[in-house]
Amino acid sequence: MSLNASERRRTRDELAENFRRSGRTPTDVERDLGISERDLDAVLAMDDDVHPATTWLVRDYLVAEVEAAGGEVFPFTSLTEQMRDAARGWFGIADLDDVRARPATP
Image (tube, rainbow, N blue to C red; front, top):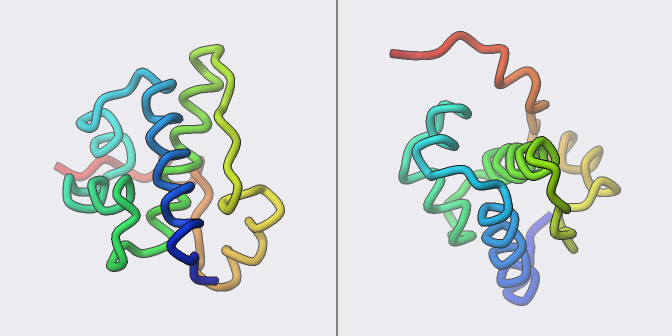
């Protein structure tokens, strides 16, 4: 599944709003998910070269952090729960709990 320009803009805005609501910093996200600054920036900008699995991982992290903070998740219009199984088949997305359970890399 590829997102068109309009869907990419909406997803970028939805990620940004949930990032704001999460109260987390870029460093928190990078450390907690074991991703690079470049990868996080690419996800938040919805760059063409970002892997969809990384986008889903950041999306799920932000949702979990907003919920953990007692906030209301800003709804996603393209990265919906209904699309999760399809994304898992297309991109091999990982579950957030599996990623968090990995040993930290130095």
